[in-house]
Amino acid sequence: MAREIADLQAEVRTGTGKGAARQARRLGLVPGIVYGDGQEPSPINVNYNYLLKRLKAGRFLQTLFNLKVEGQKDAHVICRAVQRDVVKDQPTHVDFMRLHDESRIVLHIHVTFINHEASPGLKKGGTLTVVRNEVELEVLAGDIPDHVTVDLAGKEIGDVIHIEDAILPEGAKPTTARNFVIANVSAPAGFVEEVVAAPAV
Image 1 (cartoon, rainbow, N blue to C red):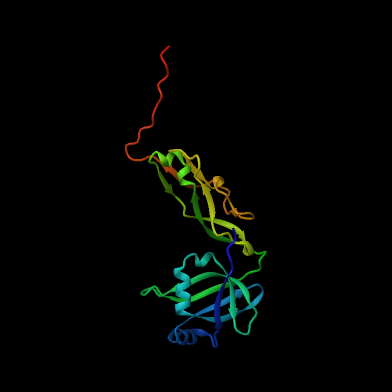
Image 2: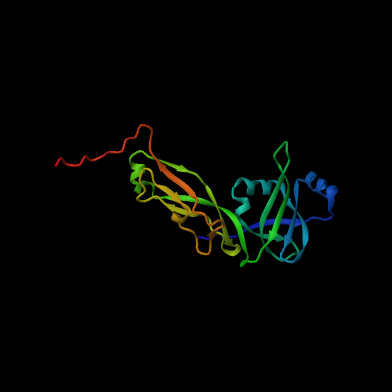
């Protein structure tokens, strides 16, 4: 399932350099830059509280935005960097890259696990040990998936789940050819597997 493209409001930043950036911050704005797609970089400002709310919502660096700047044509962008104050950990600058819908980009996509109740291993008291909460995929900018799905139905204690076991969104592919581990169903402490004795001959 592709994510809905959310709007991101910004305004043109007049002036460049450290002085203009400091002035923007004094006014409760976070300076930023929009680049790419063969166009000149455009300096912008984003409202601090508005940006902070977006950041706290999560997955900011994995979200395609429809950037809306008054007087300019809307552009699809993705955030490539958020600089933060080293002491206060507050955003001080943001970088956005323009994208076409057919552009292919590399992103970390969240992994969602389903059908816990249909896993015999978990029913026996096993624990789902998640090795990767996110996986790095190459995806289409116009069809960025919300998540990657891992179906736990039928998984027994000791089963290891690899990237090849995941249900990848159409058009998405891992950035590495290695069949890496996403999770496993581990045994609870003191677990002893039942062994059925062979009948005596």
